[in-house]
Image (cartoon, rainbow, N blue to C red; front, top):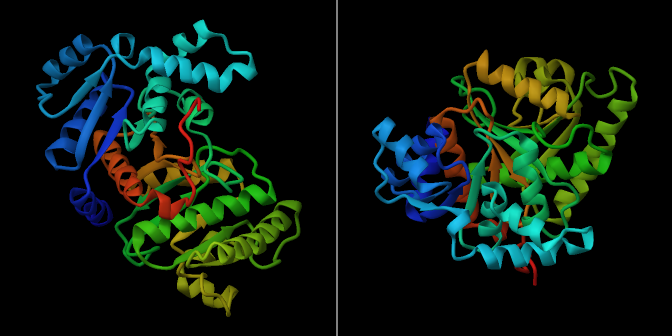
Length: 350
């Protein structure tokens, strides 16, 4: 709670509007209630108002301060449908299909985000990843000069010797199954940029592998080595305060005693606060093990590289997890142009 408590304090100084497409989901309602009660901004729930009120009544949750929008009766439905049609007509989308899409809360929420009617979006509590990402990729799209949209988990553990006072940024745990060298470098740079922004300290990025500095030979090891060099160059060009090292095993990344035996000249080894995994299998498995066996507080997936702040939470998330993710998204929104200069240059359909 140390990390997320600091995030909440930051957001209280600059409250934001966060849209939640799953408005009738009990955990979303609980998180939205806390979001408003903590003075973090305005939660916007999408869905049938009668259904939302029914669930809220069953849970004895007050809806004071919470905005509810039904896409089907919204005054913006025609405008949003037209904009989505213009965005996707070259892909063969028909006008009737554009309207049908905008009736779906995840599409409607993505358009709200793109049109600056919300500062951030949080979905996924009751939807699979594809149904959350597809609208965002089609409407919000990637920020300029971003080669790969990816995601990261923010993990907070009890042992403050790990990471940055117990906080680790881990990527990619949710989007790209088998990243290329270029994509892996982009993931590392985007995660380092977010870690630097959220933690206020220099990012120390470990590019993970089953090998440490050539202790094994395999094509996947070579990919991590190449991505490490590329990430260093790109971070330097973007003036991101970060150190990158790899390839290295996770124990060498996190445990100073082991790092001293395996790596003698590293600014990262034994002190990493960012862990970059070679593929989605390892990232997803590691993050869930740390959450459920290591009892870490897990906040994510925070999407990296989009034009606007958004997150795809796990269907296993608690209301506390969702509140934490919404808080991180709100803080991102405060300085999003510093994270992604040139983002939001155009509104969708223009």
